[in-house]
Image 1: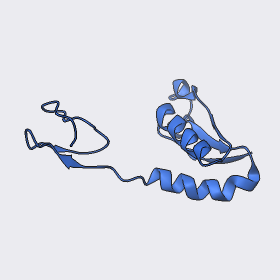
Image 2: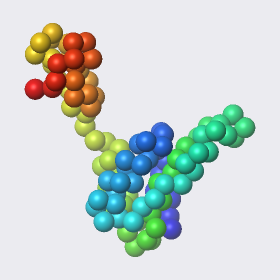
Image 3: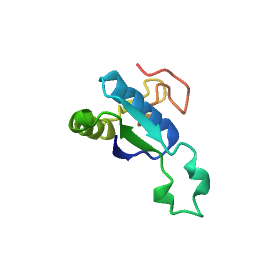
Image 4: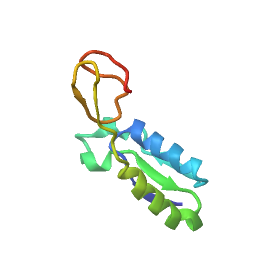
Length: 100
C-alpha cells in the first residue's frame, strides 16, 4: 500500500477515490477525521490522504491522480442576465437560470 497524495477536504478526497476506482485502481482514503486535530497538529498533517492498495497499480494511479488534480473548470455566461459563471455550477447564482 502506497500513499498517493492529499486532498483539501473529505469530499474531494472521496470523489478522487471514486474516480480512481472507476479506472480500476484499488484506492482508499485515510485520515478521514483528523482535521479535528488541526491546531494540536500541523494543518498539513491533518488533510485526508489517498492511498493505493496494490503497489503494481501505483504508477498508473500517479498519472490518473495528476489528471484529476488538473481537471478544467467549465465557465459559461448566463443567457438571461449576462453573469459570468465560473467553476462547476450548473445554475446561475444571480438569477437561477440553468446552464445552456
